[in-house]
Image 1 (tube, rainbow, N blue to C red):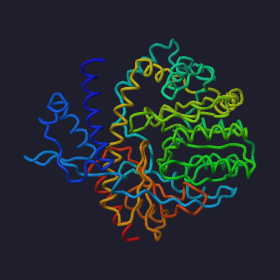
Image 2 (cartoon, rainbow, N blue to C red):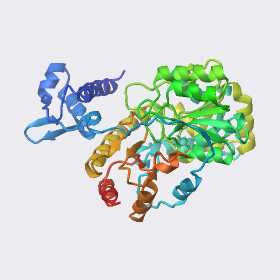
Image 3 (cartoon, rainbow, N blue to C red):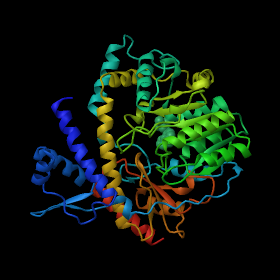
Image 4 (spheres, protein in one colour):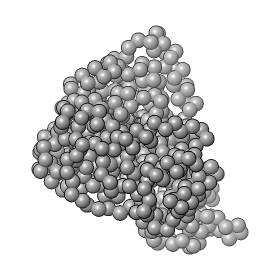
Length: 476
Ligand SMILES: Cc1ncc(COP(=O)(O)O)c(C=O)c1O
């Protein structure tokens, strides 16, 4: 470890200890923290290490410095915000009925003048643009035909090798031929679904879930069975078991870590049980792990694939949320469906673009990904807390907000009198773009919910926009 790394490690540890004390109530709003000098003596670290820790906590809005007085606890996230409510209702197989709302929202052009709160992507200022540029140049120069040839249908072999190493952080290893490169996670989901279903089949999903999954299912004439997901822990293994026992189900599609829009994360033990259940019923589980790397805690959550011994889990992910949505690089680890998924990818798009795959391989090979992820997670967590505080301040009394431990989005429950699609339209008129609850379920239980993305750094424009949005809600 270099001296720089050691310093980083030390101040992060101090910041995390204080943050934990705030979250568990040992430190309360208004409590004064030790002075920088006192804490540096107590912990036997330099004053600059303590300053860095306090600076980070200040950035998250958890503490504030008062001139000539010191540092004070300002905000206790979990204690002050109520999570969205959970109703465990009966579920039936249905056709997909929310296409019209989804089309309305995704077809609206959101230009620069809008406050864009509807897309779950990191803002370009959070991405390592210069390093990506160097990787593109290196990829272009190092390929004798400058990227004009078809790439291997399964994907660039070097990139697949590097992707296989990413799985080490969730306790698995794979061979490069276990992986199929796709055009983003969307194509990964699409080819996986095509590999294991036929029109008229039923697919179990979480409720609420990512609207793109409804679009895919509808395009393949598939029906859904939506299992209600709990705000913190996602769907329970018991409910999944019940659904698989009582219905003819051909596939399950889950976003187990930091579900979009709920932000929930299925605990590792429940993930293990879920894999046991789908394996027993021999029903493939398509696991969308696009947000798995975006955790704010100390450890990356495991995946369902971690526990998959017999190959029933088709793992899907991409670099769209962490590095470069425009590169359109995703991947599948299809397990026992390797041949079928590969074939579907081949007939869907033949191969993925050569140059972006080579650039991505160069970026990963240089060891640039880990450090970038570390920074991005920190920034996102700060943004998450800042957006949450503003919503608490500006939205009407009774508003409930998710407290995600990773990902990019907040799921917000408003008063029952609010119709989210009407709110979406009114906000759009005011050049604020949000995602209404109706696009995340075929049922009507999320009529008064909205999703807000905090992928952009908090700015004056964000502050004014959220305040305006609060006023629009108040007057609906
Ligand atoms: C849960 C989830 N899956 C898949 C996608 C699509 O990802 P990609 O851009 O890699 O195709 C998104 C994009 O928002 C998403 O939120």
